[in-house]
Structures are given as structure tokens and as C-alpha cells.
Length: 306
Image (spheres, rainbow, N blue to C red):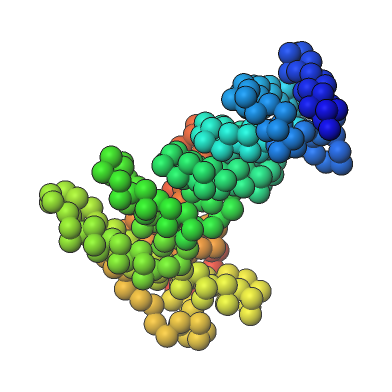
């Protein structure tokens, strides 16, 4: 029985040596770095647990500094996960890891998103008061996972805080619309319009209501265009061509008073709005300016577009 404390002390001393040494590239077991178990460290370093968690926080930062491949950035997740197992209230670790883990592969494709969102969800569970973690998870859901409705719900909740930026509510309505949840988007926009305390805010959300109604129509037009394309093997020359083809009962009116048209990318747009009510896409000129959708031009058609 007397050997147990001695064995624990010996094991603790073995861990003290690497804790004092300069960090080196990690060993791997399969596709993940070989790290000690949090429960084992808590037993060995019960009195020095804060110091040990700080050490693995430093290792987390070092892994980011030395990473150059997607798999090396994925290792950051395991270091951050261990650090926050040792100290679940170490809130900055969640945000730091969540931001740095995803890697852009090109063509709007990202890797390590699952690990990034996992560490952020863990942060929300353990430090729910840190709103930065909530927003970062919403960012992941918006731009990496395209789970717009879940992102909208997070942003809508964040917007309820007294010190929340005013644009949070506007972003939530945009996300709900992009997710196709127009009822929720409209309800939120109308509530914000009717509860506005100044005319400028009231006018802003009154227009947002019309933008949501417009986006709902545009998505319906996109579906009609896709039906026509799947059947005919080409895009319709104009939106009005969808009516005699049976893909639309009639061409709806634009809630913002504009004219609908088919853009160069084969989607529908309105002359009353430069862009659709969706997240900004990375369609930019070489000078960095966002490209404004233009009507599709066809060589020969009987029903010219507006």
C-alpha cells in the first residue's frame, strides 16, 4: 500500500520533466496526437492543476505556430480539448481554437470544421456567458456549414442582450430568409419594425419585410428555372417564358416595385435591389469590388428581358 504514493510521485516527476522542457513535435496515435488523459493529470497534479492547464494552453498556441498542413491544424483541437478538460472555464481557449482550426482548401471548401464547431459547442456548454463563443459558432454555421437557420437562432438570441450591436437583428432576419424559414424571418422583421422607437429604424425594417417577401418569390422563381432547365436542357430565355411552359402560373409582382430577370448565373434577381437577401458571396472584381448581378443576354429570343 505504501508503494502507491511513491509510484504516483514517480509518475508525476516523469511528467514534470517534459513540462519543463522545450515543446517538441507531438507523437501520433493514428491521426491524432498522443496526449495524456485529463483524468490522469488531475490525479497527479491536483495541487498544480492551473499550472498544468496553462502549460497545455501554451502547447496549443505552439501547435498553431508550427502548423502548416490541415492535419497539423487539426491537432490544435486535441490540445485545446485537453486544456479545457483540465480547466473547463478557460474561455479564451475555445475561441482561439475555434477560429484557427478551420483551413481553406480553395473553391470555398474548408476542412477541420467539425473539430472547430465541437470545441465551440463545448465552450458554450462550460462558459455560456461568453458571447464571443456563441458568435463564433454562428459564424461557423453561416460560412462553413451553411446551417443558416441554426445560426439565425443563435444571432437572434445574442441580439436580445442590452449591449448587442444593432445589426445582429438584421443579420438574423437575413439568415432566416436564406434558410427558407420565411415565416420566422417575417415575424422577427415585423416585430422589430413595430417596436422601433425612431422613424429611421422603422423604415429600415419596413423595407426588410419587403425584402423578405421578395426573396421568397426569388427562391420560387429559382425553382421554376431549375424545373425548366431539367426538362428542356437549357435555361429559359426569359422569366415570362416560364408561364406558357407551365413552370409558373403567372409572373409575380415584385414587392419592391422592380422587375424580375434572369441573371448571368442563371438565378433570378430584381431590378429594385442590387443584391439578393442572402449572405455576401465572394464574387468580386480584381479590384475587390463586389460584382453586381447583371441580366442574362441571349442571342435570339422573342420576349426580351427587362
